Length: 390
Image (tube, rainbow, N blue to C red; front, side, top):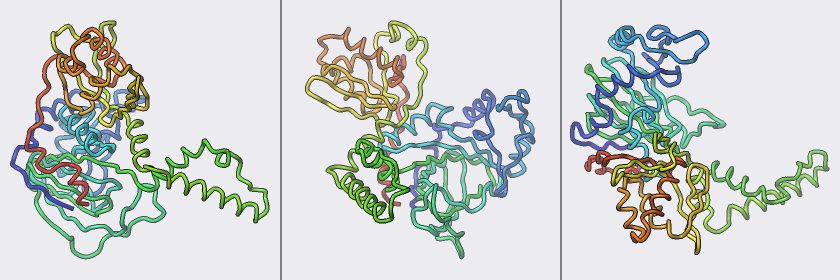
């Protein structure tokens, strides 16, 4: 667990209060997306919302009732808020690009000193961005080292006093490692924080991947010898173990596993109408900005071709596309002229066709003007170092 103190307001752009109001006013929600919690219990949705019709899962907020619940001490939970607001989506994409792991961002908003949730632990790493106001944290540490989502045992609750107790101010960043018990209480003022949940790969994930790779082996694909003698079954287990050990012991196993995991990671969806649905594929502006929507895309260079693995697909391009794809791989927005220059500028029409194809495939998004830059001081504590400290 580590706290990184920051300047007040440095995270304010991630979710200003007017932007949250707009999301709540304009959106339709499912119960899993928006919840109210108080004292460790979920408040029934019908106390602050109404279904649009009995046969639909979506509901619309009754804003006066929700405001009353929040004023009485409830905490507003908005899950996957990165899907609803572009600056938070950019934050999640940046974290995925650096950490090479799946990231989901949730929002927690409260207005009084009551607890929304009881003391609990999470099955993923948590990065907390205190956006507005303050929160009081009590952290107890783990009672089971590296607990898993599907585990054979549950961690026992912590006993005694917390290991740390502190106030998180607007602009502060907190890392809570997986399995560390904690509880949060708002100070008596409006408070909003974002939690970026990061789900790192474990040894169980590596073994599952290795097992899939072994499907090329006839021994792995054959029926289990359930009706064989005990000796024959034991010999089969021995051969199975040897095959798994050889697979795990092959050269660069973890590197190959991570590349495969990155290639399958879903893109962060961006809709680019009308251009993604047209033959031209690019806006008529002289120099639009393009950005990769797959933060963990993998580029593989060969003599005559370049392969881009992203969003569970593998795209093949001529070697001439390599400089353009390599430039996009950093996840930052690039003007079309810059991409053309990276390829040598000899064939701008070919670059135009390439970029249009990438947009139609959904792995590149387009902006007609330069997106707002990320504040520089957000990088004071690089995400990879934050996770490593756990």
